[in-house]
Amino acid sequence: MKFPYGIADFHKAITQGYFYADRTDRIASLEQAGDYFLFLRPRRFGKSLILSMLENYYDMARANEFEQLFGHLEIGRSPTPRHNQYFVMRWDFSMVASYGDIQAIERALHDHINVCVQGFMDRYREHLIQAPSVNPDNALASFHAAVNAVGQTPYKLYLFIDEYDNFANEVLAAPTKGQDRYATLVYGEGILKTVFKAIKALSSGQGLDKVFITGVSPVVMSDISSGYNVARDISFRPEYYDLCGFHESEVARVLEKIGKKCNFPEFQVQDALSMMRTFYNGYRFGYGADSLLYNPTLALYFFQNYQDDCAYPRKILDSNLAMDRNRIEYIARLPHGNELIANTLNSQGLPRISELADHFGVQEMLTATQDQPFLASLMYYLGVLTIADTDAMGRLMLRIPNLVIRRLYVERIRDTLLPEYEDRETSRQAAEHFYTSGDIGPLCNFIETRYFQVFDNRDYRWSNELVVKTAFLIVLFSDTFYIMDSETAIDKGYADLSMIIRPDMRKYQLLDHLLEFKYISLKELGLSGQEIKAKSREELQTLLPVREKLDEATVQLARYRAILKEVYGKKLRLHTHAVVALGLERLVW
Image 1 (cartoon, rainbow, N blue to C red):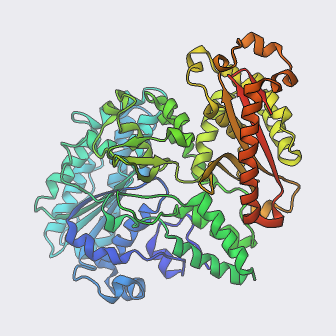
Image 2: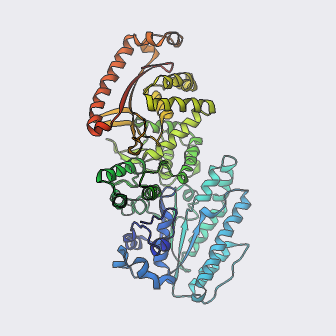
Image 3: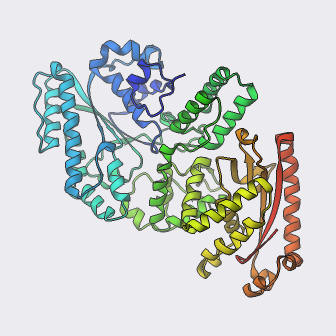
């Protein structure tokens, strides 16, 4: 099989025989839904390919290729009358440079639109009665002239705008003067607002008939709302929830084909599906109880490597998506952002909001209080949170979608708490020693002496076993060797931290681990921090509250061990660890 990794060109994907997950059955529905659309999904989720598919479907210059491109797809069985009935033009704002001063950014945007208009003129010259020349100093005048030229023909124009908020978001996220430059772009008579005002004006019977816009979040559109307030946001519509992304059934069929090529037994194919489900599945778009979706870019990355090597990719996170950690960095710089990131990593601190905000600008985010939904909604749009369920009140419960995204959270917190190279090296050595030996001593010593130091008295009142669990998760996290999960559901109970060896890593001298954490405050112990520090670990182990907590954790671990043994059988090399934190001063195990 050929996988279209990095390919957003529908024509190329179809004519060169690449794998394609058919979504053409939504075309008829889209035609009935309106003429001006906004469709939001996280980065690298397949939005550009959807636009390319629509572009090829409606392009009058591709009428003679319709059967080749769409005959074997769902829409080919019952095409709509509008197929191949439009001039099409596409802008891609991810190509607009976001660096430099405002004048440089405006110039870059004008240049991009002019290049697109020139390409449009060249492509359709024989179909236009008069093909006007491009105005090098005013791209909107060029676009207006192109629309006027279309208006002289029997056809109309379909405009596609990909990543409408890309360069504006890049400007906003810049660490220096980002907010000031962003405000100049979108407020008042800023260039971005002016562009969308022109699109709106030219949609009123002058030849521009349909507009389809993709992006990541509604923030920029909200900030230019008076400039373009006619687009229908279809991002939450249940009929389009899977317009981007793969269903598990689609993933399973591909894995079966790869399994046959590699002569894998059925259980090995199922292991691969389980692996992909853990790392790449988990996205839900909209309020319905629809099935979860896989990130398509990550899935294609896995497919390609799995087929080429008949083995899992060693690096489970595609480096092309690793840059999404910049989005977490941006969230961290917003009010209460760091707190929300830290809380989200623990399942007991997951956000609950009454609804996803779909109209909020930068000012709402910058002035948001902790209980407002803007930050959590933005994290949903960025793809670092997704809808898990609703609670008893009907509020939306958000969660991290999968282990690949969890890694981005872990890396952000680790970079904040352990910025020094020496600390990173010490923690890495302690973790690797633990992976293979089960000796938790060096790990606990490191967390005691280094991690606990980063919490000052202001944070101390928030400390509990969640803080301790987060410390261990940050230091131990490795998706190269393990499938790691915090709050792992095991027979109606929840293990604090499980580390199950990846199926392809069982050939190495690694151990499975299960950790249970308990917390005792200094007040409960009746001891001061100094008194705790003065005692040896053996003395601390004899304290009654400590013994009781250790016994409680040991009983839980024994029950979890028995259940995991039933699941994994003889291949399980499980070591269990009960750890009790005494305030944020000492650890006993």
